[in-house]
Length: 336
Ligand SMILES: NC(=O)c1ccc[n+]([C@@H]2O[C@H](COP(=O)([O-])OP(=O)(O)OC[C@H]3O[C@@H](n4cnc5c(N)ncnc54)[C@H](O)[C@@H]3O)[C@@H](O)[C@H]2O)c1
Ligand SMILES: O=P(O)(O)OC[C@H](O)CO
Image 1 (spheres, rainbow, N blue to C red):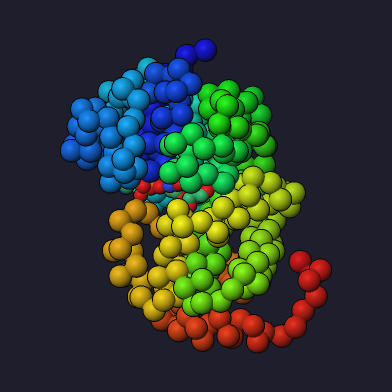
Image 2: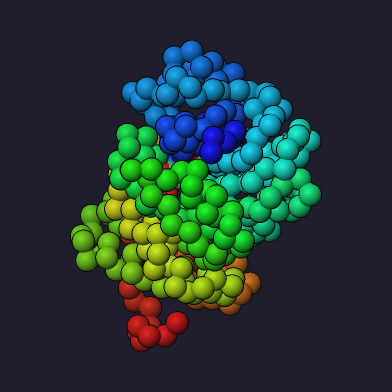
């Protein structure tokens, strides 16, 4: 059934997901705060900064007034960076006129509180103003989804009925959605893989080979699972789309902003230069801080995250850091 959907965040991923929804026959409005960008989407049917050379469907509407964008919405999809989730949710509550399903496709942990995004959304949007919150995550570069390349991801909610609703909204012959009821596992896998992608990029930038890349992904998955389980996740979720699936795609692709940022760090650029160069959100940088602090709080060993934290926030030399992590005491692979 045709649904009215508001997409909050006209960046790379919000635009690609909005395109999928329009192609599936839904009535879609994308909301953003930059007047010029909104005009470009409505008039040129492009979003050149975020998805260069892509012609967007003529039916996709863009709007900079939030109230107009969300009026009558059956579902509202958040795709702003993690740091903006709480403030955008608060703005939304003030203008909501329906009780929509809330979906988010962002990947990170809130700074300071270390909360997952669905927790922030549930805190900001009272239960009487929304249905359940559904998390959308998995191996999916916006650039590939935008050109209808085959992609599979997961929709997760506590009440599976809502994950199934989201599955129906997005499914088509190039975009396949699995459901899951492990919201914690899906959100922690999504957030933490970006840290490992920074490390994987750095290893490439430093000139190491495929053995090193396999090592960081495998041991990265071990520490993602350790922290995720300590936060309440089902360990099986980490071998699914939002776990190992997303880890592989982010650690091996030049499309990944996190991988590219790590690559530049490995080549000797400093963090500020790297972020200035990117012009888009690199979630792994702030997630590294939140995850490192959380690992200290929960007493979970995360040597890769700790190493990347030291490079990003304490000025550790990236080459030296790679050496030190290899010289840690030996341990069994079976220790969890
Ligand atoms: N790009 C991808 O392929 C991809 C895939 C899956 C998930 N994600 C996740 O989706 C989220 C968004 O990523 P993206 O790639 O679209 O980022 P982006 O940098 O391409 O775009 C972010 C958008 O959010 C807007 N924005 C930033 N701060 C805002 C604020 N305070 N209020 C309102 N709007 C604000 C920006 O103007 C921009 O339109 C991230 O959490 C990312 O990890 C991205
Ligand atoms: O470009 P990145 O590094 O934010 O990664 C994009 C997606 O999360 C991949 O699934």
